[in-house]
Length: 183
Length: 299
Image 1 (cartoon, each protein chain N blue to C red):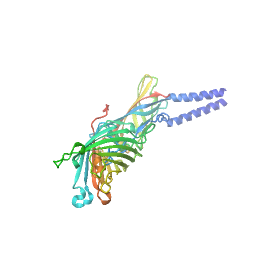
Image 2: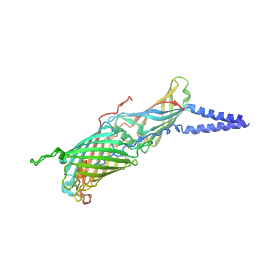
Image 3: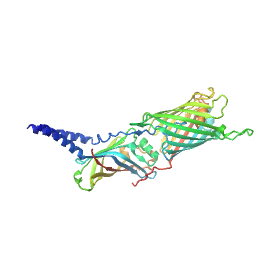
Image 4: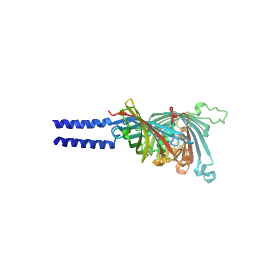
């Protein structure tokens, strides 16, 4: 009886501790911007999925490429058809870690700047990326913000020769996520 | 002792569980809400070659289309394989919203003026509640505005007008391969005695993407009735779509030089078998007249 109780308590606390550490969102916003003589490009996706483990600092993102919205329908089509090939590679993912998680005091309101490193997979190419992120705690809610610049060539995204000098070779990626507790 | 062992096992178990879960943080969060995803880019252009494709223009997009059809290739080098003779159509299509496109055009042959309304009833989609095909409806008319040389007779508006109604049923089977069927009715008010006023035809269009920017396209119409069989033939066009950023070039060979539905469905007389084909191209240039609201955001 005693053993059974202990076993049950052990298991339950294990599971609870576990889910409390995790916070998530299905509405993370990922935007990217590229400025160039021919065309300024910007796109927004408001349905990225992210999970952050407050204990370990592990963080992951996943986003559907087709969910990016552009100002021009043709840009969106070219993005999906010619650049990132969304039918073949529908998702981009990031798996990484906030390396200095002890800095963040989840019980205290404020903004904390932390380094993040991990692997970004885009267009079937995985690369190591490092960026600075800001974790903000306000009225108990946790939100994250980060910006990074990626080079298209690194991800095997080809710019056609005709527009090579007119389109930026890098894009700035901005990520905003407001986390909720796991249910 | 026993309790210690159990506690140890539990610790091990939860550790293991923790490790496993760390590998897959997104599991359970990510795919728990599958959603409907519309299938896009079934064709490079809003036309297969001559006929409408299941593809629509985006909202606020203007498509300027310049079509050229040359003379028969089998005329030989003296006519530079038909390139010495050209007819053309200048057209403007506009996407009012994502499911509604309207267009007008003017063709040199017969001084045709044509217009159409194209409405997408159903868009093919993946995921729950998604239709496996797209259904697009088209209605259009054309007026032959050529000058009446015989001044003793007048040609009324009704005599000059023709109409067509079309349903396009299409499916993008894979990233590369699309097929569509388009049953069509063409009505002409005035015809020569051997012809019917109402012509029924079935269009078959297909695309096979060869690379990211090049596709092989076939556009065929089977004319079911009404045309005298020794004269009228079914239009078959074979070509390549080449996309270069804002332009789509559709280069093709065809046994028809018609550039609107009445012209190519009811007016095709050349035969592929005799080399009686001509080269032609469609040039499409799109302009975004209206940007989506909310752009640009501060970046």
